[in-house]
Image (cartoon, rainbow, N blue to C red):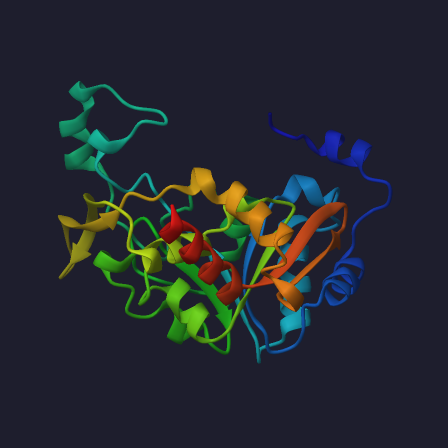
Length: 272
């Protein structure tokens, strides 16, 4: 159910401002020069003065240009319509879609299902976006170029993807009003476990200024198990000092070591 502005006002005890968000981020453990991937539910934060722009600017203020802010910019609809199931489209439409679908463009292709903050973030000054047609990531700050460069088609969420580069930098995950089911980094753990079935996908991309449908390797991910793995991660104390719970605005939030949750996911998936 879509939350209206009136709903947000009614549910919010006090207006959420940029300065209040900065205080909340500091209290949760976010610091200058961190590398952090953020997943956000705008409606859970409450009524924010300035909306998504305020949330992004507060994050940037805390991290500073010495840090790196990352958000998923996925566009799963830039893909083969025969794979669509939520919702599916009639098979009689497929040929028209193959012919007319615009190719992926990092500057113009909108995100799908990523939320208002992530969609706003991809258009922010200084933000870079990786080139994968369905699994792109947007980043700002010191490591933005390195994290978003050379995002291979065959490694959408794997070790050489932006997720793997965050892992190599000992980065963090911030779940802001969302649960482990939204924790994209756990897919990297699935890749490390080597228990996934390989599948093939197709997307339209620009090659030498011409649209071409390309086929590439992907994995059959299982994010439906992430909430259970996340609960075990917290219950068993696997996170240790690598996890902190708090509130951002009105949103229950978790800041954790990305490496800790990725490694725990890999270990759990290996054990079955």
